[in-house]
Image 1 (cartoon, rainbow, N blue to C red):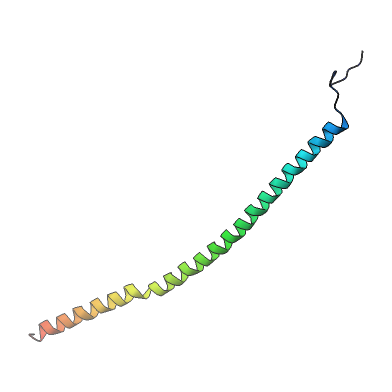
Image 2 (image 1 turned 120 degrees about the vertical axis):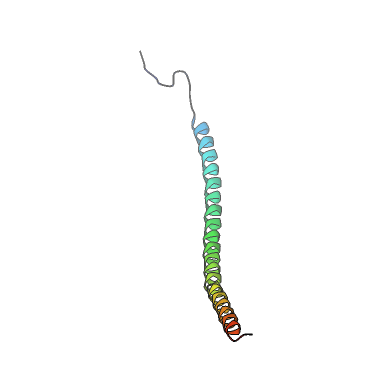
Length: 88
């Protein structure tokens, strides 16, 4: 008694070759999609770095505003006190 795992099924070289060609085409499609994703990722990283630098520049330019506002309000308070004490 022969223990053939495929039983009466016969697979020829042509079927194997056709399946190999289909698999090769699918691998090529996946490869092109991976390249597209890698390109998009690189562009995203570049955009992220650009946005980060812009945000940092805006933050550096904005920090004096609260200080200036505090100084102006302090100067107005001092002027109001001086005007009040002089009878003004």
